[in-house]
Image (cartoon, rainbow, N blue to C red; front, top):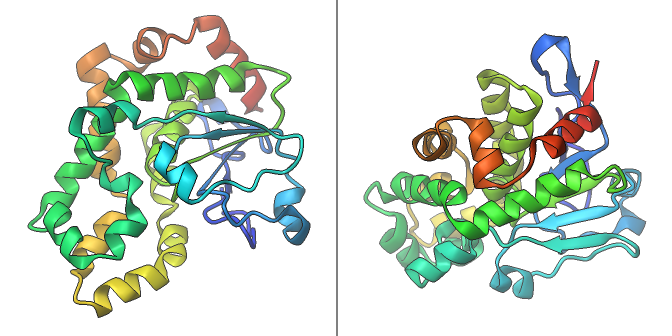
Length: 266
């Protein structure tokens, strides 16, 4: 689905229209994804205001929310679902996906954390944590529970850039709805141009200070290998996606069926 041309929200997309099995599609206007909402101004952004968002699920860490708090329209229900809380507790530091702006502001820090080919391995490890850790499972359970509720209304889920935690969330929803591997990967990778545009000034400053362009690309973009790491972790831990949702996320079959009924068209 093409990006929504919001003027105050980066990487805003509707899952509506994405193809599913049997000639069906995702119903538009109910499940949307984005980057953080710290610059959101509905009064100056008719494209966003027209969406009628009623629920927001925020996957960011405490530090991210404190540094760049969302600007939330009146009457919108916000659910905090920190997907990386356990990963941070285990390692004592936030992974790169939660420190995009800090890392891009410091080429030395970027080289230390992500240089020498470490970027892809570190991102894959983070994606495996999005499947394995308790906090991540709770975060994605929150999302699915809300989507199963007929009173939720249009729902927007997001992290900072709207590409990693949010990308896996979109994959979870689309897999449940019956999207095939090609559609899943196409939607996952489709955010690259929007993310690179949003972070272009930071990347330019990073490289001007001697930062490695390859590190910048690995940091701000998404790669199919990242997604595959999470999908492989589902198979290793649960055997298949249905068991991951039922046993890992603890979302009952009845809720999954309600999600399918609500979000499927055709």
